[in-house]
Length: 219
Image (tube, helix red, strand yellow):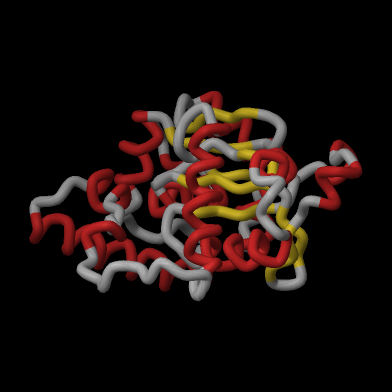
């Protein structure tokens, strides 16, 4: 594929999806990563078979071909007009390429690697109410996996709250804040605020002065 067919923004979208190694909503690019993702970018990448796009919310995921194309950016020359931030990005990508070459690890294996928290040696939990947040995190994870068709799919917080109606809201929200710090967990706002139902708005959790309506857990 000629390089001129992909813009710098297109490349950044592919690299972001590769590094996160999970489907991402459009709001992640625009509100978290600061990438000006527009419909033209989605259509171009989708037409080349590099991404799959789903609706409600608009979510992007790399195809196998997309993984291969994103991997090509490791060690690639910065495109014209990349600027200071873009140049720095490609310095970091070149380092990753050398790290991958040295270790013999495939790029997709590296970015999909997850730390299994269960393997960390820790004292057994105390059977008391001293750690309600930890219990709530476990309950939310269990409820999520029952509601999601597969790991990494987005689930409305309203549906999670309905599934855990006995869990007090303060504990629920505190657990969501804890989960938001973990790898493989994404709390995002609904990209189209107009489609939100009143109960979905009410179920949002506020993190960083932003209401989050959906959660995806890939691990």
